Structures are given as structure tokens and as C-alpha cells.
Length: 148
Image (tube, rainbow, N blue to C red; front, side, top):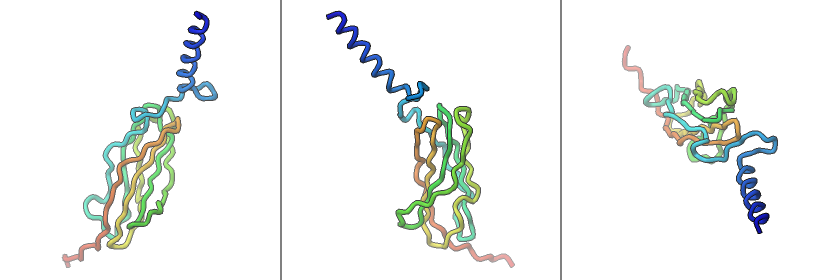
């Protein structure tokens, strides 16, 4: 009976450990919100109204305890469910625990009246992904130049 209890305890311990160890015996944390990439406040340039003359730049700080492998911005126009992906911004990995995603003019100019929705997806070095809050803006016509 004592051997069965020891064996059962050993099996439980092995099962618990297997959830933290990958196939190549490297530590891989289980997914949970504390381990996933976390986003700071998303900043857009230009600030205020976005006109049909403006391409939009996006910047956000991202933190991940286990390091970052990359981030990518996705956007959609009006009610189109199709997401438009942008280039991936790679990071160095486990040494990049706090990074800044910078997409210079990442969303091209759009016609006035277009509603743009975007969000950023970030990946950790262990494949954990998280998605930022959705940001929405509507493009307006530029104000006429009244100074002449």
C-alpha cells in the first residue's frame, strides 16, 4: 500500500512538472495574464483629428516578463471584417522585456469619412500572445486654409 501511495505521489509530481517543461527541457511558463505581453497607452500621431492628408503613426510600450519576440499592427476600414496586417516589428527575445512598438506612418492616408479600427498583437519569446485594446478613429476632410 505504501508503494502505491509513493507511486501516486510521483505521478502527480511528474504531471505538475510536465506543464512547465517543453519537449526540449526548456522552461516554458503556462499562459496566464501575468505572463502575457502587456500594453501601455497607445499614442497616435497626429494627435486630435485625423484628416485625409494624414498617414497615422502609432507608438506603445509593451512589457513581458519572459521577453518579446515581436509585435504587429492590424487594421480594418469601415465595417470590413478583413484585417489588413502591417509589417512585424521583431525584438531580440528574452533580453527585450520592455520594448516600444513604433509604427511610423503605419496606417496610410484614407478618404474622409473612413472609419479606421486598429489593434496591436504582441508575442513573447515563449509564444504567448496578447492583443491591445481596439482604437477607432474617423477620417475627416482637412479644414480649408483661411490664412491668405
